[in-house]
Length: 240
Ligand SMILES: Nc1ncnc2c1ncn2[C@@H]1O[C@H](COP(=O)(O)OP(=O)(O)OP(=O)(O)O)[C@@H](O)[C@H]1O
Ligand SMILES: [Mg+2]
Image (cartoon, rainbow, N blue to C red; front, side):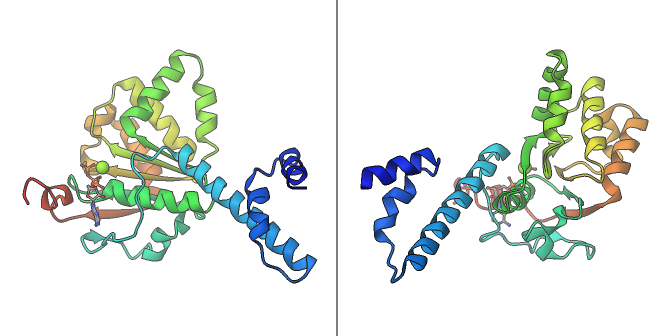
């Protein structure tokens, strides 16, 4: 009988978890047994879905809000802290700009919001901005730019980490503008940067292009200013 159940599960593409776990289900009635069995399968699928979302998001390192202190961050009144922690701003297609010096937790928080969104089954992609631009460039050369932009257009959240850390060439700036313009009012972007707006010209070349990017990004966005000392420095093993 066990083999038969395993085989049915396989045919139904239910994985082997169900066949392995059903003997451990305690139930007094058929209904109770079936309900618990189905609940178990649903939970398994949910975990698989979350893991798939997390894999596809390609975070550098997985980080969460657990143990993350917000004391050093100036959070504007326009965004409740809960909307950050629950990634609720994604529903409103709002953007976040994290500005502050090195090591102050910008990437950590951007990742934590992304991870929370993945847990809710949202489609997220984490990029270092330079890597995104490189991929866009490569896609254009290979004649796949349309395909890449289409994939990006399926996201709920695009994270552009280290925005402005590496200057772009004209072509790169135009490609990045295209991505930002495509996201406008359709999906959320989180940007982490240590470059104030007035210095964005330096990375995007063209003043018009810079204004167009800033305009689209800031329309529905919240600016969080990260302060304090580098967490890396204050927690450095060398210091200890
Ligand atoms: N408030 C915090 N609570 C716990 N860990 C933190 C906090 N802020 C930063 N960290 C940790 O400190 C390290 C540096 O943080 P992070 O990489 O997010 O900095 P960053 O602002 O992105 O810096 P950079 O501009 O250099 O990229 C990470 O390991 C991160 O997990
Ligand atoms: Mg960072």
